[in-house]
Image (cartoon, rainbow, N blue to C red; front, side, top):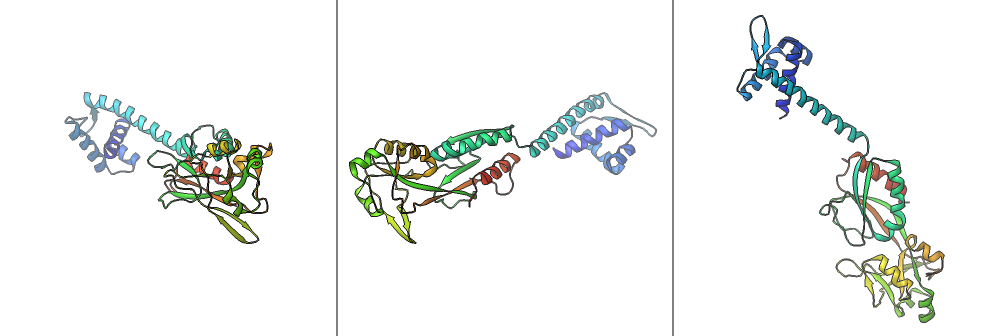
Length: 298
């Protein structure tokens, strides 16, 4: 197809300038090469396009109509290339992004409003879920994930770690008492997060004076949705360990009470995953740069 378009462009130039030699000079080709392009078109179409004599040349009736259509086709090609160049220069188009529910609702969504204001030609489709999302199979442009990540061919950019906080509702503490050490959690209902296969997310790890305390939590309720965990804790059903940013509102109004203040609660790694490595569209480059700067891994 590219050879055919080249031949069409040569043909149009011959028609506009009147001779093979003039077209050859304008295009930086030899007259023989110009003739080769014209013969290739005539062979493909099965009819002469140009009548040539020793003194002059003129278009056949087919050649005249073909010239007119070639002008339209080449103009459309030029317009298509201009669109591609413009899209390669200006971030635009739709981005499908997936993120954990709590982080997505509390921190990412407000940030995306700022991003879209900065790039008015970009559309965002945000899917919030705490389950494992397959970026390729589910056709996402980017996925933000909390916690350990499986080996993958995707490109990973670490972003801000999520500091967690251990807390419970006052009604639960009034009924069950307040744990004073991590070991006390063994006597409490701990509301834990599970992955899609139903396995516990991880042990709870606390530190104090350079010593780690690894706690295998127990509880009657486990779920793979952070919103449900928070709702259960607010209802006084147990103790949760969740990102502080997600629980900030509940902590500030006293609906949840932080626990084990003398112990450092664990933080969870967070990463931005995307395909393509360094060969990114302008919209993806803009999104990656924005997220990395907005949530720096410090």
